[in-house]
Amino acid sequence: MKIYFIVCLAITSVLARDDGLVLTPPMGWLSWTRYACEIDCVKYPKSCINEDLYKEQADRLAADGFKELGYNYVNIDDCWSEMQRDGNKRLVADKKRFPNGIKALADYVHSKGLKLGIYGDVGPKTCAGYPSQNGVNGSNYFTIDAKTFAEWGVDSFKFDGCNEDPKHFDDLFPKMGKALNESGRQMVYICEWPLYQHFHNPPIAVNYEAVAKTCHVFRNFGDIADSWSSIESTINFYGDNYDMFSKYQGPGHFFDPDMIVVGDYGIAYHHARTQMAMWSMFSAPLYMSNDLRQLSAEDKKILQNKAIIAINQDKNAFMAKRISNSGGQQVWTKRVEPQVNGQWSYAVVYIDTNGIGDKRYISKKVSELAIDAKNGTQYTVYDLYLDDGKEVLATLKTTDSLELLVATGGGCRVTKLVPNK
Ligand SMILES: *[C@@H]1O[C@H](CO)[C@@H](O)[C@H](O)[C@H]1NC(C)=O
Ligand SMILES: *[C@@H]1O[C@H](CO)[C@@H](O)[C@H](O)[C@H]1NC(C)=O
Image 1 (cartoon, rainbow, N blue to C red):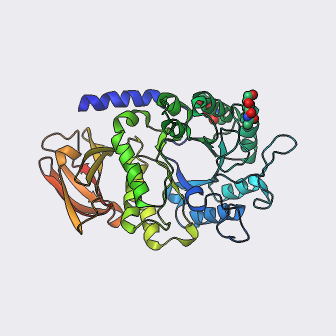
Image 2: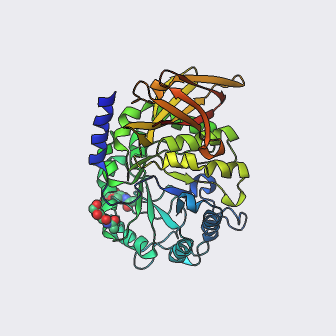
Image 3: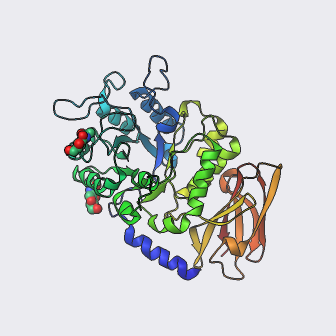
């Protein structure tokens, strides 16, 4: 087991991007799951894609304690532009919905100490039919658009893969990455590249080594929906494919299981806690897609849990490993700081997905959870959803078991095991 981990570490460090951007997973807000392509601002003035939406979410990030915790990207998704480019072939923001243009919006977001992200697509049209970078037929737009985004002060670019044959992606996504780099402005490059190859019929083998060298963030599973079943299938996808994926994940290059839907309509309190915990276990980007103007105190507390965010932002950016999955019960473990006497701490999540019963126990030996534990080591166990992780649950030896009561139907318990000195 130890040898296995050493091999993993060696591969990870070779793959790391060297531009120093987002060494820990980016955090912030992204409009898609909650607002999609709602452009009727007469009927839906508070929930359409316009500059006020992004400004008001930025206001909340800055004023309600999110920014201090690391949530600092405000990301635009599809449907932000005019249907035609201007006389210089440059993209133009929709004149009614973004009357001041993207540069002014970026200035506003920057004035709040935050960063702005924007969206495009590699095909001849975006997913919602807007002008795009048009890779195969119009590769000129790569350079012109990257320059435009840089001039506007954009800090992040999400590149979608609609309306194009994904067999061209291995060529096109690095080209756009090069154009972004040559713009001279650092931008977080969010790629949907593996997603479309994975779901192509027949599937196209994903060159993850190239993806991880090119993109800071990469989506490889279907869009998240505001439902527990969507969250559960996403969790299972990463559990099933850990061995294939984990070596391509590290500081500066992260798998993206898509947005956080805590605060939306479709999931219960226990599911919200499980999504936040598992996205943190994955070292995934934390892009909330919700309405920060109308967040319950309960949801805000989940999203602002410092101990869970620390698991997400752990500098090693490891993916969690599912070490057991049976009878509707899953156990996940992730090596995190601090290391004490050469032994790692571990974040541990227990999930119960059974639909029957009230609450159920899950029990695992400490030696199975703390994979590098030496005999005789004692661990202090903290409950991360209690009192921001300051609550000590137990002190356990490697031969002891960590047994916890878990809410069924998608509830979780989240703990951290720290070796005693
Ligand atoms: C792209 O180019 C091909 C070949 O030149 C052409 O058949 C096709 O219609 C073009 N598509 C678009 C969207 O311009
Ligand atoms: C461009 O790429 C190089 C090499 O990875 C990197 O050092 C540099 O910071 C990048 N520049 C921008 C503007 O992203």
